[in-house]
Amino acid sequence: MAHRLAISKIEDITHDVRQFTFEKPAGFAFTPGQAAEVGVDRDGWRDAGHPFTFTSLPEWDELQFTIKIYPEHDGLTEQIGTLGVGDSFIVGDPWGTIEYKGRGTFIAAGAGVTPFIAILRMLRDRGELSGHRLIFANKTEADIILRDEFDAMPGLEVVYVLSQQDRGGFEHGRIDKAMLERLIGNTNQHFYVCGPDGMVESINDALKQMGADPDGLVFEE
Image (cartoon, rainbow, N blue to C red; front, side, top):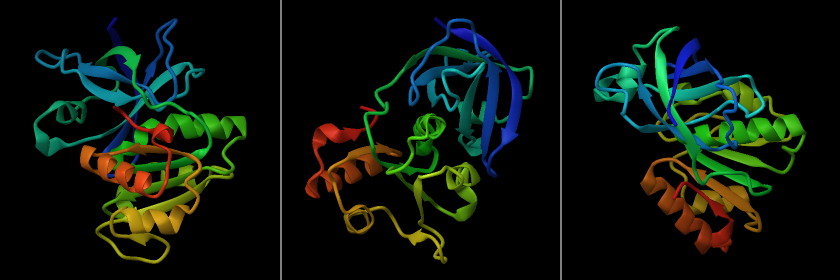
């Protein structure tokens, strides 16, 4: 079932990421980490069907998406970047295979962090973040989504990786097997991986080579 949801709030998170908030329809339920197919209430875009992850929590009165805008792509996110308060999304039913399975390490690149936002917020609210780690790759420091929020999460270890900047306090390069071996150590845990398909595949391969249980890898299949 599709829902027409009017935007109640828009907030700039980074130079190219915006947070969109909507009133939640009665009875709408989802699990942290799930996504929905989204269109825009404009001719030609209502059935666009692009997946975006809910970054709100199920118990909130509002729904929220945190979306990277690509104005140069001439696609759905370019359209979303022109929306204002009062304009509407067309939101389908929740789906997705990323959900919390137990203590472990979250590995994300860019907007791939969005499925983990609600999961980490859920763990924060439960007081259960201790023992979890977030390894978050971006091109530059300015690209880091919700950095202040992640840094303030009690008990969460956060490692930022920058591919196009080399500066103190950050890992530099790309997340590969050597970096994972140095940062993780024990592979007897769950691993949550989200980002571009090639990145997810290479990290999953590296983790399995390191001895991680394939059944402990959580990613969008």
